[in-house]
Image (cartoon, rainbow, N blue to C red):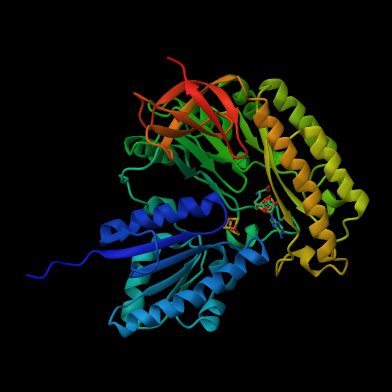
Length: 448
Ligand code: SAH
Ligand code: SF4
Ligand code: F3S
């Protein structure tokens, strides 16, 4: 008798951690349908690109990748093989049918709110023989459709607790691609956290486009804040560490700041984007706060947790940004002293208010400002790492290193730490002293 062939799926994630989470969930949905995950597209029967629309470059990458996949699909067809190509994520949501018009080899297009329908979409593709495009925002809760027991995971995992955004910053596509703000109920999140722990996870990063705006239904019928959710989850045995990202300065509530002082499982790391340092630019970005308020907030957070690592996001060359505005961004950066950051040139996005402005900043000015900002941020990151030299800290061991006996773990501040791990295994928490600081990681020895 012929053995039923295991089907292979390759999922490639672009963009933010929420896409990484969604890709993982798609994998979980496909497992029971007989799909096995593979690292490359060459052998795959199903290829899913989970795309990002945040900047023009991110969206362009998708079409160049689809061009390559078309050739692969044709090549396999010559040998009698069939390949299904799917475009998921934020480009799918933003462009929908347009993707199928531009790239005929695409079989499925579905947005971030419909991937739980993937098994049905695959069937519809076979039944109709036509490309299937599904970019509704369905009323049903996609999270309710996700697998209950999870296959073995690594030591760390993402868990989406909040989705979408109602803030409409004038440069940003997220409110259009992910829809309006939504918080999952606490008990549903708790069940998923427990399933992750059973699958081997020790550290969970709670995700949301505006994670600190979380306001989900609590187990007692009351609305829970993010701080409340963190308290709740930290009671689960087996969870050693909790993190959350991305936060908005407007939603940084007192109880969340307090949690950083009081909850030992909540790691001393905060990603709090400011985007720009000029109040005029912040206003035109519709960020809803001034630079001074951000600085005061950072001071309060540092008072609660003096060693906290602060990271941020920046946009340079927003329409109308002058040299003086940009210098205000540098000034704020100098004051905050970031442990890490992401910085980008402003990219006009179709459908967003700032894209239509006539006072776009020339490309070379953007490049020059980005280089200056990144030089400063790079120095600050080095300084932060350097200050860890000689310090003792707990490290959670995550994966094998390059040399025999070496493991790589993470510090509380999210730095990679290499160490000689004799007698210890992945998943262990060890106490170390930092011996050396490299450009990308620290190295350490374990205390006996
Ligand atoms: N919700 C988060 C950010 C999500 S998008 C927040 O409010 O901070 C991630 C980052 O991409 C943003 O922080 C911003 O720095 C960057 N970004 C978003 N739109 C952009 C655009 N049009 N051009 C350049 N960078 C952009
Ligand atoms: Fe985009 Fe602003 Fe919402 Fe962040 S808060 S996702 S930058 S609109
Ligand atoms: Fe990109 Fe969508 Fe995330 S646009 S940054 S993948 S929310």
